[in-house]
Structure formats: C-alpha cells, structure tokens
Length: 202
Image (tube, rainbow, N blue to C red; front, top):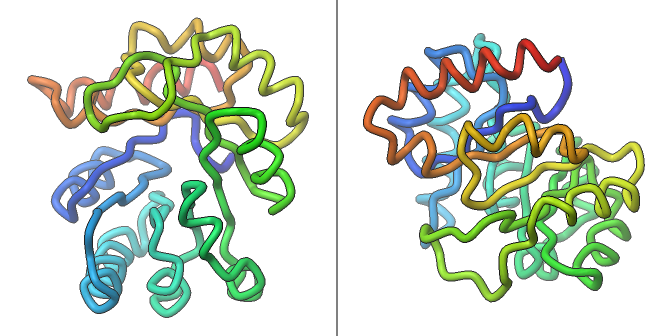
C-alpha cells in the first residue's frame, strides 16, 4: 500500500482513531495538542494498540519522543516541531517522517530533512485553527509537486470530498481531511465516500 494513503484523515482522539480504523481507513493521523510527555506517551501507546493488527497506519503528530518510545512507525512534524526535533534519533528509530510546509523557505527546510512526504496547506480557508498563511489555492499544488518530484505530496486545509478529484488532478498524492469528517453530520458515510473515491483513483 502507498504511504500515506490517498485519503488521510487527521483526528484528535482515540475514539476517532478507533472509529476510522473500523471503517477501513489506511492512514490516520493523531493530532492531540497540549499534552505533557506522559500524556503523549499514553495516548500514542493506546492508539497503536487500537490500530495493531489492522490495515491502519497510525501517524503521530508532534510527539516524536513518545513515538520513538511507543514504537510508532510514522511521524508528522510541523515546522516549529521540526526545529526542535532530534532528526537523527527519529531516523535511527526507523520512523517515516512527514513535514508541513506553507511557503518556499519551509519547503527548503523540509526537503533538507529528507522527508517521506511533504504536506502543503492550507489549500482553502480553514476555521479549525488560526493560520498565519493565506489559502494556497489549487495551482500551488501543481507547483509544489513539480518541485518535490517523487516525494509524495499531501494537500491539507479546508478540503471537502467535492474538491478531491480536482486536487488529485493538480498533482496531490494524498488529501489530509479534518473537518469534512469530524464535523460531518454522517461521518461514517463521508469516510466511505472518500474511501470509494480513493479506490477508483488508485
């Protein structure tokens, strides 16, 4: 299976990890904020237990120390976290690393770390977190993909299922989805839509 999968939900709780795993999602990112070291280790350990023996690949957001200790295989870092992370320790632990980017300087920083994927965002306006960056727009996806070549490109930020075909056509290898699942009136049905689209496009 490719990594990350074409449909890449990002969630903030163990309940969501379990729900998505049961629905057959292939890549799930756990992004739980403001945890201390022991809380981070606990939630990562619990999430890995949920996904063990399933098709789901658990991506740990930010907490690289917990990811190493708990034996996770996948990690995602934002630029601030990347600046403070021990990349040597992360690589020695065998973690695959995805990195967020928003502008040219951040892309250069990310590529220097030899990531397993690059994320570009926000593609559209998003209300989920205050962003220092304006929406990137779909043409930026094509530009980024041309620049990173064979490295997988993940598009994130305000993306709904209805945008998927256009975003894949622009060059994204994967779409990270937050509110289109977690704030949907029928999340399970939405996930099945995404999974169906991903299979068709694969």
